Length: 349
Image (cartoon, rainbow, N blue to C red; front, side, top):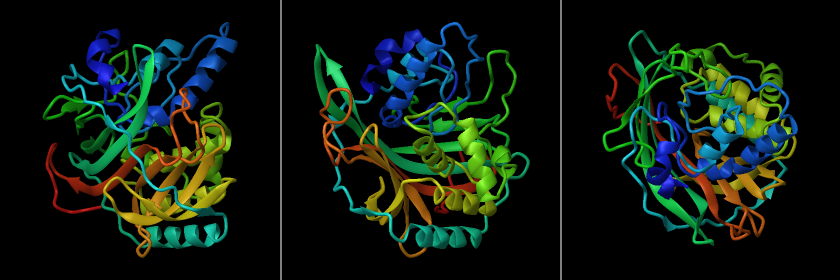
């Protein structure tokens, strides 16, 4: 867990940027699923370890020991992390009422709005700058006593080159004060290309923009991840909307693809990490009892952020995560192309 990073940092080489705290808890079921699958296939040669996390999303490494390290809340950065966040009270919110009625119409309006919004291109030597707020709640066990705590709401800033080879991350739960350089260098010292679970701007620009084709690709490349294929597909779509600057036609395809995932509902009132109210497209994970919500402005249909909230009682390994507990929350507050690394723009998302 985040408060243990400093103590256990020696267990792993710190070389790339990882997801924000809180996202670990949300993906814990996926971790355990993968570990169980790895145990069952112990005699099958393991693929190469995946590295180069540049977004607040989860990528399943091959080795179970690597998964255990990620589950412990460790991050992968170029250098040591001197920040060990102090645990705070768990984050809570009212669980909004959901309905399956009107979902296609809502997603159609969101897709049409996305198609009309221009997206700046990323030129040679330029960077995508994304600023956000995020927070999460997790279980912490000390001396066999488990409590539900959080790191509060934090500010995150990230700069990414179009090809993903250069970047900078400032995240109080992951990096030293002032931030840390990030890259996509693998064990052999070569730059890794973008992929679905670790995309670059260039990779996103090359994805299919037909909703059916895109959704089929998502199902295929996330097979075996998460608690079930539908939930993992929905989660992947949400992850692709966060720390990226995707072309308008791809955003449109993502929204239309989300509407094709079984079990998707709408929530009339959801709140992002910045306190902004909006309408959400959501899906309940039947295994964990948590609902993932993509939140949009109710008038402009601009993407605001994401929230994963516990809906059913007795969640988590301890059974202490009750309805209304916010497992993960984010809010995109700025998204722009800048000319220099660490340049801060005044433009908002």
